[in-house]
Length: 341
Image 1 (cartoon, helix red, strand yellow):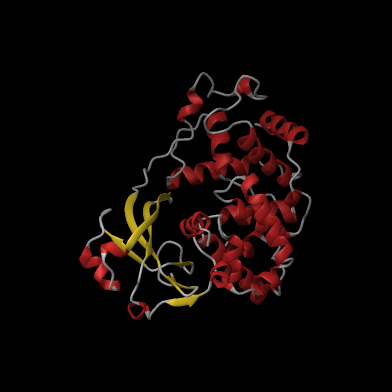
Image 2: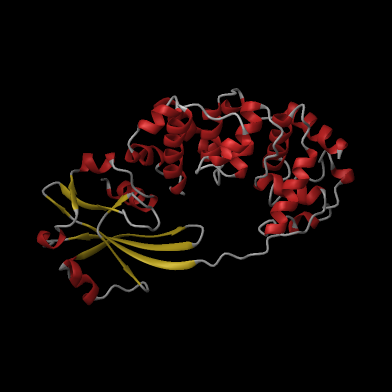
């Protein structure tokens, strides 16, 4: 185990990427980077991180922002619950800790929006506390190097990997070790095509000769359901109709056009009658599929001719400039791009 720690940390010293959140001990910046980079590649998340730091230089600035402002800045990054939780946690840090992140692992965990992974990251990177970070990269590296076939999505597996990582972390350099394993998994011991031939721990790794393909093991398969959304681009005299998704579902608190969800891909006259529409009024502009973690959204966008505006009294009226100020989901953003809105 000692050899593994030394080899991985030596590799990191020579190969680590120069990333802005690695040049600071500011707990707010570190927390921000960790939330943005969850389920997001570094090259995709970098600009979002820089924009958030510029717009909200302290956790107090973030806490005082309007949620729509936060969602708009997050637009395009996906998994919008992260943005909403980010905002809520910022408010809690301000209310409970006067705008300073607590320097203890237990108090970090007490924050509603911070789980074991993020608490360990802040504790080690900002405060040099010996708490092991276990993310997807760490699961992969440890399962391959130590030959562990316990499913990582099982209760026993999560406990086993956390205990192993905790036993490896050197008290004198916890941040270095955590960064090293995460970086090695991100750059070298990758999911599909790890660089086994020139791997620095190849001689002692039991997952060579293709065995890496079966590790880490996942026990559960996520059921994915199909949903069918039909959106209506209704515009009259420069005014567009939108609604806020203020109900518990995907894209909570984001804006979109009037929409009908159907059981299958077909849209019937009876369903259209809810908005006083008929099939001949619809000109399909875009058909798109958007895959989320548990859902496949099949979307169709229609330009509506001669709508009965009184059938849409419950919707919000905005002009084109106003639409661009609102936070919208990726499907809406794509339609706005292709339609020239």
